[in-house]
Length: 175
Image 1 (tube, one colour):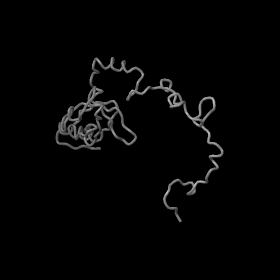
Image 2 (cartoon, rainbow, N blue to C red):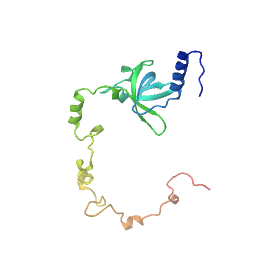
Image 3 (spheres, helix red, strand yellow):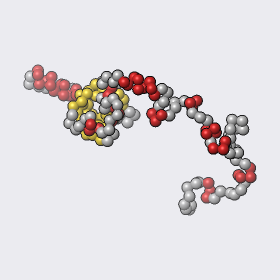
Image 4 (cartoon, helix red, strand yellow):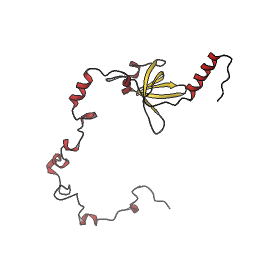
């Protein structure tokens, strides 16, 4: 590409403008971004001319954020880090990744132990077996470790033929 200019300063300014327009976002890079709009789930920011991405509400700051507008407003300039680009080309940005972790964050994560979000255990060994938690110890066809999976009795399978050709869609048949 050729850039023509009257003076050296205007040529450099034109070159930087062209480079900004053609620059590709890089994962791990930090950008000065302008907040274009806010939503209940985060803020859309422009990191390069014509290139926007989402800063999810959970990535605005450490700790819980009730409303996006509590942290950023339309028109604000913020520093963001590109943390991912999904298969559809959408940019995932974070302001939180650039902030130092609060001192209580390490203790808080240690208090949670082996729990994930929602307080569920991570491994199946931490949970009760399903049969033990069933009322009355389970039924005859529930199956268990000694007898194997539940089996349908022969008399049940021969009771009635199914209607409708087995399509399961219900409604009228096609002709």
